[in-house]
Length: 72
Image (cartoon, rainbow, N blue to C red):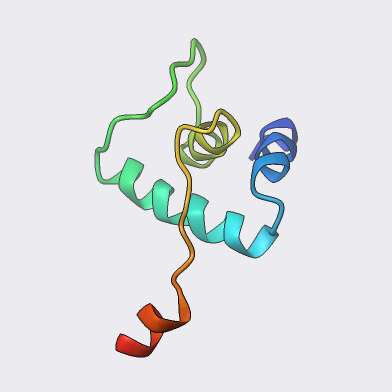
């Protein structure tokens, strides 16, 4: 995992716990064959691709409300 991509992604999602969850979910999607939302001239790992997508604001997240959590 490239440090510069990690720092750029942390600038967008400043909570490391949320960043880990967003990136891990996206990495699973990329490994299943989903297409990357960013283009790169170099071969990137799924982790680096997901971090770049976050840094470039191609993917985001929405936290569940307490009401949504209570319904589960």
